[in-house]
Amino acid sequence: MKAFIEYLKTEKHKAENTLIAYGRDLSAFESFLLARNDKGLSDCEDSDAVAYILSLNKTNKSKATINRKISAIRAYYDYLVVNGKRKDNPFDKIKSARIDTRQIDYLSVEEAAQLMDLPAESFRGLRDKALLEFMYGTGARVSEVVRIKYEDINLKMNFATIREGNSESRIVPIGSHLHNALSRYFEEAYPSFKGGRPEPGDYVFINSRGGCLTRQGIWRLLRDYGEMIGAGERMSPQILRDTFAVHILQNGGDIRTLQELMGFDNMSVGLAYLAVIDIHVREVYKKTHPRA
Image 1 (tube, rainbow, N blue to C red):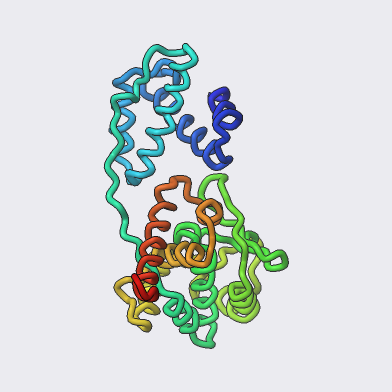
Image 2 (cartoon, rainbow, N blue to C red; image 1 turned 45 degrees about the vertical axis):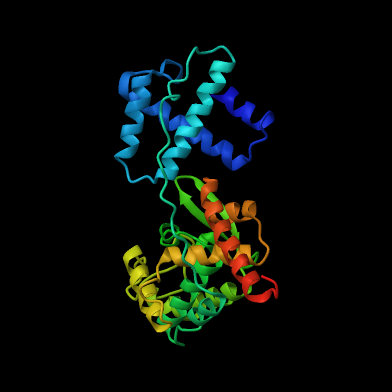
């Protein structure tokens, strides 16, 4: 496996995130083989490949994630075949799952600005303001937002460490609006919830009893604020993440930078955002060009 990863790095010039993803996918498959029949990667048979796909389909993993895993493993066995290590690729007959294109919904710049201005000048309002600014300003998943701790926020250097799960993390800049919102929240509101300023191991976003805000709590909070701007049914953590992505691309950001900021390893996600931008550009062209 190490030789294959090195090959991807030196010969195929794959990005570091891609190398990590390939290594993770192959290690997971290796663990499956070991548990299934005490086999190694080189011993895989067609039946093992089928069994693995069946096991993945029983999880809640998306089709895109499953397809990425299939692609990584198939590439590995292609590498073994080309280098004479195997005569066949057990994943050659495995077909990728058809992906239903997710509809990207996002707030306009005006809607996002209205949303950020809604929270009141109260302890809860300061917390909600910080939460909204954080989700819109970092593009973090709701599962990452509930895990963020005070030690992950660096207001002196203006960056946040987003924990993706296990030992993986990424660094996201903190903009001026988010910086101000977090500063006020930590100074004025947090002590009223927790009884003192946050310590390194404390969760950032907490409820009035000092406990960590849950995913369900954030959903309800967003829905309530969404109704105030006429977007109640649309409002969700995902729409803020999508808004983050679309607004960056609309203002000249590139897909590779977006991938680093948002932590997605499947480029079909980035292509979905690019498709939205393409539609937006064509609509502007039709409305503004005299010969459109």
